Image 1 (spheres, helix red, strand yellow):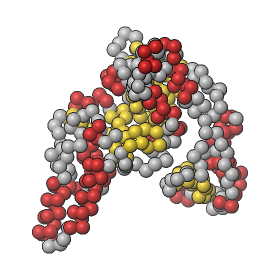
Image 2 (tube, one colour):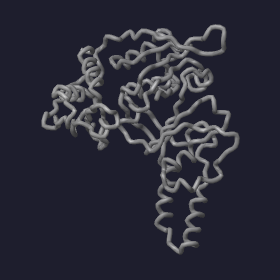
Image 3 (cartoon, one colour):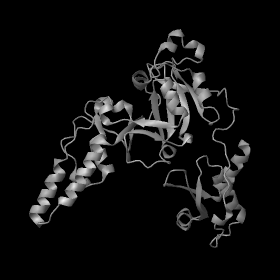
Image 4 (cartoon, one colour):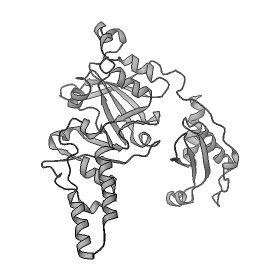
Length: 345
């Protein structure tokens, strides 16, 4: 899924891009005054009814509910994105009146390295549903977050917002390959010389960067660049691809890890898969920029049955992260990705 984040175009915005992280603020820091207004009383009313009707104590459940609601109120950050990169109002509001840029993310890559609490499309309604939280959601934090943070007024509908909720509030690092493209605003300066002398006197939060500076910071990452343009004979925006002036730069995070063949299970379970397919998967995984330790490479029986063709699984860990990165390959995908490795060389 493609998601978009409009940025002011400051030096701070570029630093976060270069360092592969985003900031998820507390709901109180967002620009909608209706954020975070919810009433959890229905949950506790339901617990009281259970105690009355079944004469069973719900104190432990209430304590668990207290923890969930406290976490949602105090410790969950929201990263707001859009499903469109050509909304003129979003460019005006969040990208310094078309002088900034917009980032295209791949959602799956964006959330691969760190576990998130919830993610969902924002629902837009005429009337606020925030009077009470649906008690049928019980103590599922992800579902409760959809109630507390997943609805806005119709005035915001044009934003086509998608939200990622994380714990705690603050910075979350992501796989740099999550950034697929950068869209330059209509008025974003192309070169540093176009920024003006007064720009240097501004703070990091306000000092602007040029298109060239963005390309310098992100060189070697295979990112595509687009220029936002006016669509002829309309009030709509469009975009045109522009050449990466550093397209021949050294590949970012280019490394090859050593993987023991002892962790590869070559058993083909009757699928007749030649050994070199497993070795090709090992070579692909060894070039993963965040690779730290291999768990295993083997035939995935479940995926093979589901896909009705052989599927090889590779699981590995990244440093300081207990989440296993899981990848599945059909034989065709193995050949294609392995060939692309050598093409990139």
